[in-house]
Image (cartoon, rainbow, N blue to C red; front, side, top):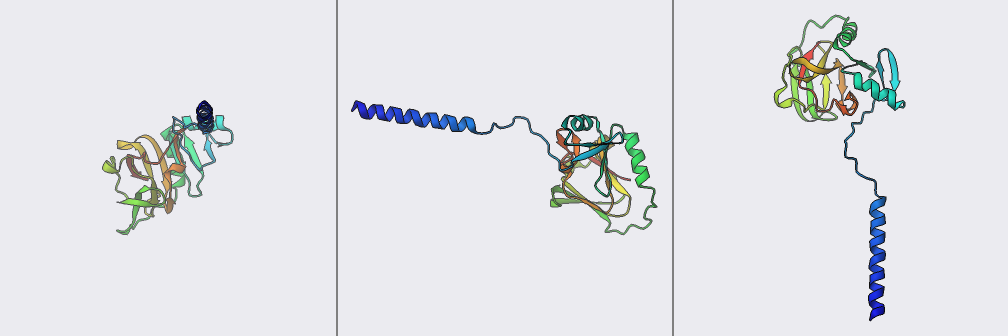
Length: 194
């Protein structure tokens, strides 16, 4: 009987040791969420900075407050709004469309890949407050009419901004950083057509 009892204790002890080893081998969960972006570089202060140089990339993203995404997907970051405005003015040197058909609306989606609920905004209808759509936009389809649109982080065109060009689909605003550990996914609270 003592032999059977010892055998049971040894077996239980071995199982506990194996279980503890298995648990400690599991990867630890991160307590700080990190934003991920598919962008591998950003042009900041005229210099292309690759995400492969993590220190410089993170330092640049920490200074970026206004982002301009060109039609080819090239991303430019600016520390101040005036410099971003100058870039947008250069992009918008082409004449504006004079006639805007009534169906000419940009569409904002609450899920990536143009999914989920949709908010349609006619070109030219600026919004200082997106109301229930504040901090809910995940993808955007910018149509023709104006040269593009600008999303702002806060109401009344305050905070950081991102400029999106016309005739483009932005299937995931999470591809564009707002801060080093935060993307534009679910961050816009006001919009302005340029």
